[in-house]
Image 1 (cartoon, rainbow, N blue to C red):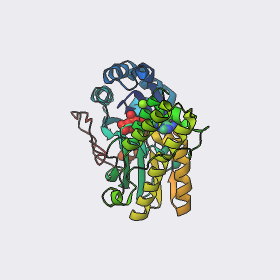
Image 2 (image 1 turned 90 degrees about the horizontal axis):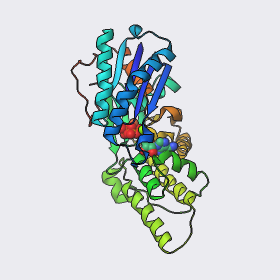
Image 3 (image 1 turned 180 degrees about the vertical axis):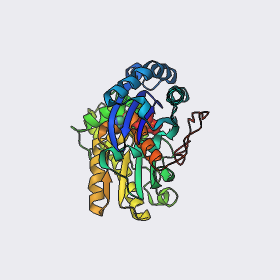
Image 4 (image 1 turned 180 degrees about the horizontal axis):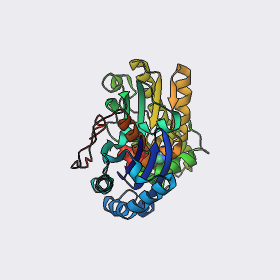
Length: 344
Ligand code: ATP
Ligand code: MG
Ligand code: FE
């Protein structure tokens, strides 16, 4: 199938075109610079930016793909989760396009798109596999029997998401927003064993109830306390060591629990997805640990990990291929769409 994918759940306006499993175009306009001075995404600013960027981005994608919109088999769009005002812009654009072209509309789950996007890089997804979803708002372990209809969340964060922890730690180190890419870069010159930061929910008594769950708020507090103590004592320290030690703690817990899931559920493939999947240490450590256990790791190229239209087009093409019924033209956006709902 030939599909258009439209994404607008946060601060990226993304439009992509996919034919089969081939990415023909992937245009992204980001409003991130407009949020930097606020230290986080301002919903209303994001919505306005989507409204401005949507049509030009769509035009650029169709032109780059060199396809005529009338050839498409479906208009695929993020229906949730995300910022309500931001989602509404993409969904309205997709509905208008579907009506104008007289083509079916598919309202899809953004988080599932973060996993599905890997098929553009590494081919068809296996029958049954595990996924580690790590993004700005979510951190989950998934068992997936069918990427278009059968997704089970076996664990998730009980407080902050991994990306959120990156953003908060970067802020307290004065590194700006968004924090993930900066910490990743700074950590390259630091010692990951310099400071022993806590690994949330890995103690024996926690594992009984929270074997596949995560907690990152204690880690963030530990980093904050450590930095404060050193500053008050007038002891100089290297930001790079703090960044590297924090990053190691996050990657250690994520990969250990992902491997435990593979063992427990008998999964031989794990797909990494979400904005934090771009993190170099997480990518490296997951590959290292998986190799030791004979588990195949699939990691989308870093450029496809953060929000984009390709993820929705990749998932949409799969949904169309399986012959699922299109969405109704009166569907709404759902800011809290559960990950088990792939197609609205
Ligand atoms: P969600 O997908 O849960 O709705 P989102 O769409 O806002 O949230 P993504 O775009 O998937 O989030 O991911 C953004 C997050 O990824 C930010 O928190 C950012 O700091 C983090 N991130 C991006 N690159 C890296 C990196 N190299 N290392 C660590 N974190 C990163
Ligand atoms: Mg973003
Ligand atoms: Fe996302």
